[in-house]
Image 1 (tube, rainbow, N blue to C red):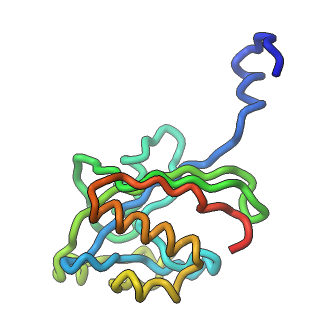
Image 2: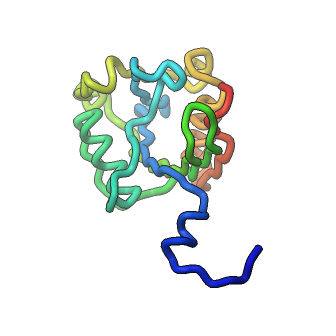
Length: 168
């Protein structure tokens, strides 16, 4: 490693590139996770409400915006972080991925029935026991959901660093 000072622009070009995302984790009143089906993403078909951060957005802002766009639900704060997620780049995406998953709380049956999906992104949603999600998701997606569910249950934020873009 060189100790030569570089202008910030040159130094920044040498650093790791990453994209950020933020999501909201909801459950029903029986603590069953709510997820959205994304027909455009066969490798990650079931997803938490959320998405990629836009320039100038902070993670909580992204989570609230994406949740409102994807479900019609406006989440209010204060933000409660459930998990930090990290993934290495791979063939499917050239950058590392860093994300934050926030607690959206428990939804009543009426609020769940009131979910309005953005048809450009999702074609259905489901509320299932954690074990019922396992066969519907790639192993790494299920492991992330399990980690988030545990974080909610224990009150201790999770750290999930194997949500990589390699082989599923």
